[in-house]
Image 1: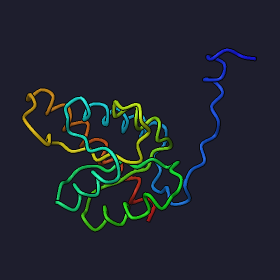
Image 2: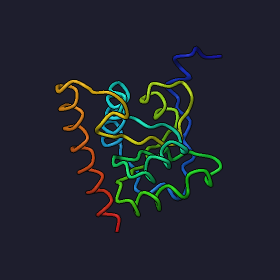
Image 3: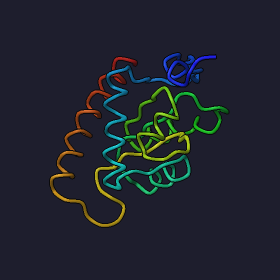
Image 4: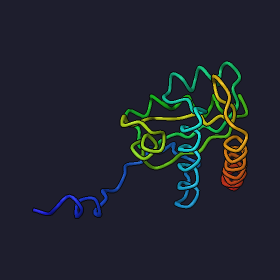
Length: 150
């Protein structure tokens, strides 16, 4: 038998959902997960399908990040349509585990909504500025990926 480090190196291929388009590449995925981590630290993140749907329906704007390896797929099939109707950009990442880690939770997460303003309270100007610049950069890249798709 091998050690834990050997099994970590051998990553099993992830079974992606057929609707996982636009799928972020390695570089965009890394930037997106970094943005999710920053938003989580600043309390500007909504986790899970229920919270994300509620926020979008109430008119919150942000970036919706959806995991591509969700089973059953019916859990998230309505999210892209909801995002398009509300003009909220969305992108798929390969793994729900990576998304949860970036969102600082141990529980695998289907989707998160990255907002630029916290739900409650205030954040410092420095943190807000950094979050906004990262957010703008990722959203423009998502827009490029989405426009090349259609």
